[in-house]
Image 1 (cartoon, rainbow, N blue to C red):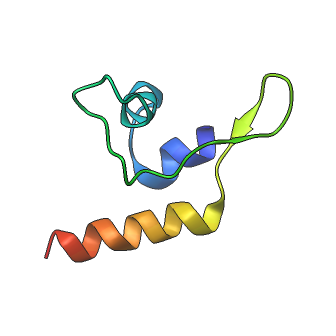
Image 2 (cartoon, helix red, strand yellow):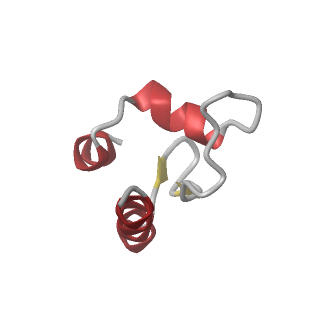
Length: 60
């Protein structure tokens, strides 16, 4: 999570809001977390980079 927050410059709580369908900050295009173990999650780097690329193209 630390790498992800640094890479996309969003706080941990904002990332969880983007994943939460009930949140006003929900972003259905944000990549889903991948379960790594009993209590660990992660994200696929390729999906995060694709999300960043899509966001930058949409903001132009």
